[in-house]
Length: 379
Ligand SMILES: *Cc1c(COP(=O)(O)O)cnc(C)c1O
Image (cartoon, rainbow, N blue to C red; front, side, top):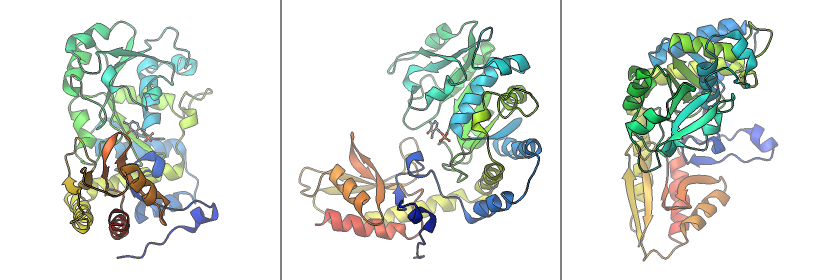
């Protein structure tokens, strides 16, 4: 076990570092950037460059990694959502770009399946658009989508995430949209790994696809990866920093620093070059380590689950039967969080389980997690 050295910078602020067994969640810091990424950002911080040239060069790396025509490093997936919608509304019209968020005279409706409404969809209307829902949460057809499309439709948004249903599916959505000459934009924030998803949705015909940079890719937490068709991406660039115009675009408050641009492309290249099978195997062995140490506790069932539709990486899931006479799930979580270091796990609330997500558990931390769980569950 490598000794974990906790960063002093957090202690100086009186904020204690924690063990993140809850996944790439924003609330716990996204992901940890590898040493190469941190070094690249440190190097980038020590020189001036032409930001426009840097954005173009970084965009080429993004486009190549995603198998798309053009790419851009954004200030996160949410920022990319704002820019995608802005681009669909303005096209490459400079006056339209300057006019946002006033959408007068532009197509300004974003269509989204009702079942895919989520806490992040505010970003689809930030640039001035109106959200139009179709279908109901449990029932949706191609006809529902067809009926929602009209002459004001700017684009159809689609969300790929474990917590929303697929509705009529991305493939069918793209087919219908393109039949009507409407672009499809995709929020796939946390859908990598698998690495193949970087290009999958583009290969299916999506017009633009956005990923978070600071989740599974391991880049800066406030960076993202956006790629898509060249014409729309040109409009995205016009709506972002817009260094060529006297009026900064709607994306100006979402600028990406030179350090984050460099960190993002470095992380993306490392991510696409790294061994996915080895990464999975590492998560699996941590999951097994914890599961093995929790055997023989009456009323506790530990199952390693890895269904990608439900779980981010292989992880031990703890199920409690009626004859378990220890603390409640929420009490267990509280005790874990209150310890030193605090351990944050998934589950609780409406989910009658505790799940220990390994994707952000650093080497050796699985030992601390197993020890603490044993203390709490066997007491
Ligand atoms: C995390 C997430 C976002 C926000 O991404 P950021 O990179 O943090 O801006 C948007 N949509 C979904 C589905 C997410 O999971």
